[in-house]
Image (tube, rainbow, N blue to C red):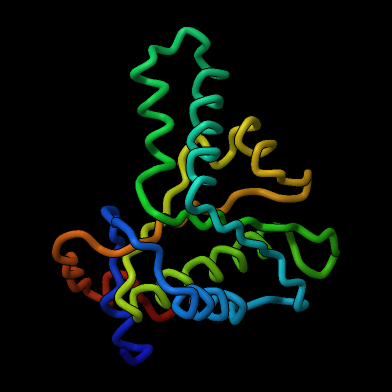
Length: 184
């Protein structure tokens, strides 16, 4: 698939299954991420691959975070929180690793990491891989942050759920460019 087609047809694929994409496909996704805009060449990102038994550890973190917020949470609600980690055979945690510098604001470093994350989504789509970007309260929860080993200067930008698409892909609806672009 050519680049423009990938950009114009990419959609989120929230329902995926195994197997985990090939190592070659994943390396292409990570290589695409590393081409994101990066003022100062700070490379303010890192990525955690969570698959196999590590998904159970992530599920345990999500369950613990939910219980930390509501100690009397029902077992069903704990399982629901845990299940969020188990929706794909691979979860890639996209992490902004902020470097203190007067030349590149923190916000720009977060955006660079978001661009790297988007590049992974487009690269996945171009290879026929299903992926969806999720955040939610676990992305900022102190229990999850600690469990993932985040440093004080790091934050989760996204959880990418990655796998083989189940069912037909959604066709993106065309948008009117003039609704979003004006001359100044």
